[in-house]
Length: 118
Image 1: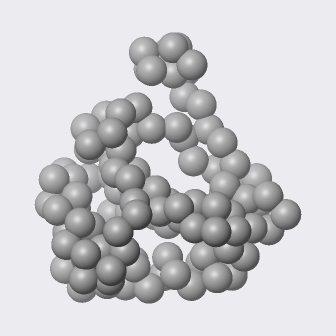
Image 2: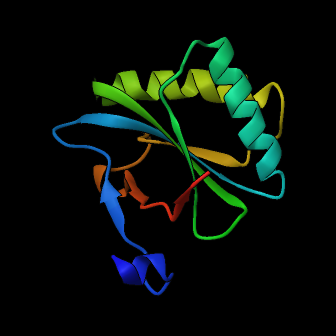
């Protein structure tokens, strides 16, 4: 784990188990990461979504937003993430990906562990 935190290795974990997930993840990579973080906080407040966590990824331009959910099916997770992504797209150019995704094989629905909380 220390090697991950020292950025020597990247550790990834699966988001799906038996076609269900406990987290929705939005990964942003771009120059406007501070604006994205502010937009997420504002959007989630208007959506009355109070439980979420924002982390920094491998470098400052990478943000990871984790939204805990209670054992959602992949289809439901994809639908919720699409709704959030569409709302974000109204305010800024899409430079993020949403996980888990029905367009990816289960083995690719993984997320790297974050480096620290923002």
